[in-house]
Amino acid sequence: MYSIDQISNATAQLTGESLGNARLRLTTLDRFDELVPRAWADQALLESVLRAMDVEALLGLLPYRTKRGPWRGARGLLVQTEGSCLKFGLRFWLRDHSWGGRHQPEVWVCGPHGEDLAALLAAHERRLVAGGHAPQWEPELAEPGPKRQEPVARSLVRQLTTSSSLGSSLVRRPRLWDSLSAYAGIDVEARMSDHGLDWIVNRAVAGPDFEEDRLIGVLTDHVVGCGLRLLDHSCDAELCTVRFAPPPGAWRSRGILSVRSSRVPGVPRTQGAGPRPLTVLGEPRGFSRPRAGSVNEAKEDRDRAGTVLQLTGKPRNYGIGREELSWIAEQIAAVWAAKGLSTAVVLARDEPDHLTLGDRTRPSWATDRLPSAAAGWHRLRITPPPGELWKLAVPEDNEMVATALEDARPRFDRILLVGRNDEWPWFEHSIGQFADVRVLVHPAAPYERRLPLPSESPDGETALDLTPDQSAILWRQQELGLRPPRRLAGLLLIEPDGKATVPEGFDAQVEEQLARYGTPVLGRFPANGPIVHGPGHSPHAPTVMDPKTERPTHEQMITAAEALARRLWPTHVGRRAVPGPAWSSAGLVGHHTADQEDGCIDRGDVEVHRGPFGREPEGP
Image (cartoon, rainbow, N blue to C red; front, side):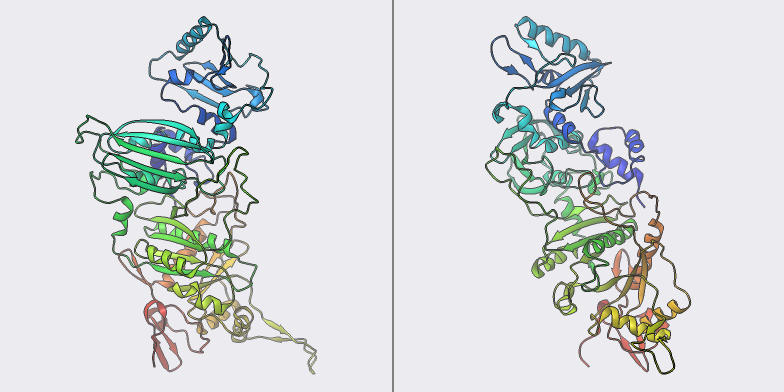
């Protein structure tokens, strides 16, 4: 299962909250796909406005009407004192709600320690009044909305709205920057562009290492980071620039984030505080810097020969589609990751993640398209070390799938491959050729005990009673057809009612016969219902790393995944999986004996030994 200590530590490292408060907040969540809270629409807009460095700069954003001239500040921004803090908000005509509305966006600003913020606000107001200006930030002060829409260049709200979520994401992770070594300072600015609003982070570094690899790892992380995509990366001795693009269809994130790291002049490079290990990157505590190479390169140096397990459904079967196969693969990979294995899910598909008509995120004043970046590996869950859980979506192209698996084999112990369901011949000669072990996922159902006759027999019978052997043959003919897939390790049955029960009696005898014919039942997996997608939900399905729900099936998932691993890989060498016997689906009749557990199958009087990954050696 999940580790509350690990996810609390990873969250507190980026949000700046205490470890105890992070733990208390996370224990109230129903799922752990977003450990850092995501702001809703107007909250994100307001957080994007409040991007200055100190309280004096924030007060400079407050709106006021000049004696002769236009408005100054962010029109519609409000502030009032709340104890020792200042509470910022938006005027109701921007929100269709009053200041005291139930969902009014609010931001509290406290500190520095011992500073009287109310006195600072009062002094700022006195200065404006002495200059003949009229402050307009009181919540009770009535103010009519603007009579016409201001030009984009003069409307801070219209500028920020298009990219407010991107700015808000930075605000919600304030401790990210000082988690890096040699942190010397930071400032943030926003710039208008043809495609939207770009955010620029200017980061001052006093040490010898820019640590751009760690920064990229966090900002592209989907669980604790911002889930961005890397656009480009260029570094020299004094300046390092990394640019990020939001994922396609990201709401109110139409802009590019640029992080510019530069050396602090006049500061010896030997100075600078050491970095803190980032839990989200899987870094162990107490490592020393500098360290050669990036974090990802260090992980890839381990000696692995990852095994590819492909999950497939029955061709033209609408019972278990690709999305359900992806969900099942993630569940299985999560169980193995919790056991300390590095696991990955490779999803090959043609259709885009989101079907949209046009670019709905593009404002009317934008004249250019937002640059896009290719999707890469992204983390599905933070798992107890040394386990890892990642996912990669690639187009359903043989070369691209082969490249993805080639990259995954030295990095992960087990890789689950999910493609489309199609005819068996295409399945054999397309992406199926890259799999070491292949499992057919099929709905669980009682096996046929009687075969209806087309017409009444002379004896008056309307159906024929079946033996377990005959029922197994009928199942293979109905479900696998006349041309069953080759090199099939076995079946993974999905229980529709969520109860993975062990068959008894007639059904157990049928499954014994199915094993003789090369299609053993490798395990049973509980179904959790449809996958939830869309805003406010994870782009992937819940895994066993999530807390229990009203229908607790996590223990059954763990049992099923462990049973599947025992059947496929009965022996292990360290953490690296060594595949054991995989069953053929050639339909040969033999006896299922204990010899199968040793890597061979007794086919009558002939003992056939398996090659690597359960494949039969070629030749006579």
